[in-house]
Length: 352
Image (tube, rainbow, N blue to C red):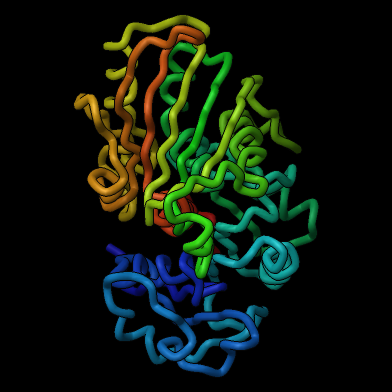
């Protein structure tokens, strides 16, 4: 039993993902928020003054009076969660790692670097082997960076993993219907999104097509070998608040039956479930048999927002099978993903 909680900091603590991290860390059995950091305009303010709180639960009492600090080494903690914008994270995260901090990042800045693990604990926990190479290559002694994928990538890859392992995969076609919270705050204006769908999200399709292949690939000692999988993505912004939906068609190496697909998905469990990590869902993938599920409003909170929900599994006239995937984009797709990564790092002895 852990008696003392590990102090942690949240970089970009006032944004949507930063707020989710603060909320998820409240009452966490292993970690405790002792530092919050944000942009210059928030530095020196109490967190309750700096954060335009957007979640239905109140600001955690112990965090609300913390003074916001600048996003620079000097924070009194050894682990930081980064919810920074990519352009800021590109410079700030290596500064923290160089100074000896463990950085669990939600930002896209370092995801595709050849020595940085892009991690989904159920999918590729072995990629943490890259940390030792990252430290040697960059001359860091204690610190390092681990990233979680894009919000849509996480739910897609979590579902693809057991199917790839059982049947092999050749091609993936995916069309996403992505919630407004994925755009941050204030995000998309009402005049743009009400009564509308926007068929473009900058860099989103490239992230889905590339990050998924890194996640499903392997670590080869000095770099990552990407999975030889063909993926085509189209991404759309839709007027739902939370929950990304993905319509997916798959071509398999060995075409399974529908029953075999369902069994592979529902029986899937991995290292986080074996280790009983606090944030890990007991069932990473939930299959719904109703013809009109999953739906964002009804299914995004399943397993505390940490599961991927699959429905409408049926034959595809072009590829082999098609299905619909739904997942919470700011919990499992962002803050919860970074938190689960940190739990795995601690459980496997990577935290100094």
